[in-house]
Image (cartoon, rainbow, N blue to C red; front, side, top):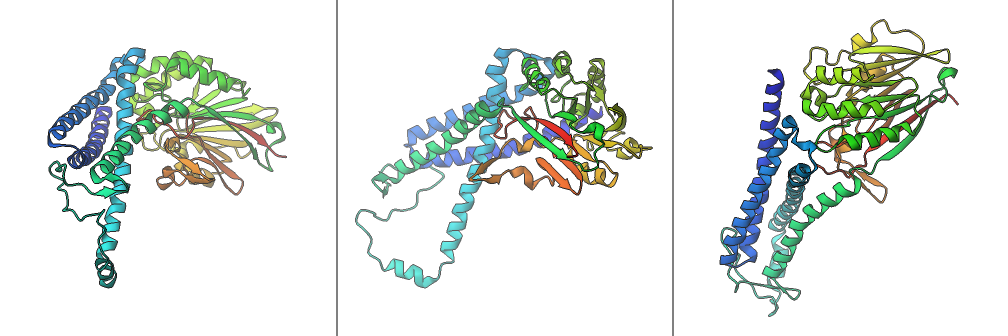
Length: 433
């Protein structure tokens, strides 16, 4: 019952926010139409736009029962429903953000003009008006504009200019969303790190950990794609594989594909993992059971000590800290009676536990969850990743003293099939030299 209440709350928030975004975009679209087309065309294009939005919403909504019924496994259903619905979601979000920016700048410009000193405005008023730029009355945003009410703008009428700009505004989010999905969604990068620990036991020098995170078996991650990823991880010759949560997306029907594929993942000292919030959305007991049957060591507020070349390495795993389960965030339980020697590695789905891990003497914390925001980029070496606004530890390596955290941006996708931040496998080599 608790799981269904969690789903109802999640979807109520999702559809409320998404509904507001759609209203804002549709409102802007209708106002744009009123300025650029004739009366007859206005009503035709408005009706077509509303029908398109209604149809796209049906595709988007069908995504959710499909995870329970298993339809997403069929390529035709993915091509005709899942991906178009996800791309629609991405287009609306990007269009909403772009409109907010444009309207924000417009409002700021109007505000500055309103408060411009009267002398400046009077000086401009004294200037002669060019015959090529006749003054025209404002065009109402509530009804289509008359063809006669146009103003020349560098050889284009006002209507032509608005039509061209608006068409570009409509096309840009669509092209951007599809292009970003096609170019980076499965363009896996391998990030290699050599982490220096002066006091690392000599027997662990050169020990290699491959970290995967946020696989999200489901509509955007098929069994075939998971097998490809696991084979790529095996090619790095890991001593140990760590998977930091979100094995599945949100449904028990997504577990069988993971169950079959994860047998391909191999490491000399084993595969270890902790659960994430999406594993709880599906069913934490079912996910854990499936993984353990296939030989994955699931650490739920627990630890396991490995003996390697005469040295000890202790792996600790903490359940998702906001999953709502009775065991959530029991880091104290995991570190209880922890041996005083050896190297310590914590697996935590969320990176927020890094400060707690440091206070408990954890040498290396591995986390995921953030996806790097999925959207972000760099311009001339300057990073623009909105995820940094929401997480203290958002992506990549963090070092405080000799204790370190690595936040993997994940290998899968969640929400929409848009990924500008390349999915990653992390290869970590421990060294004392």
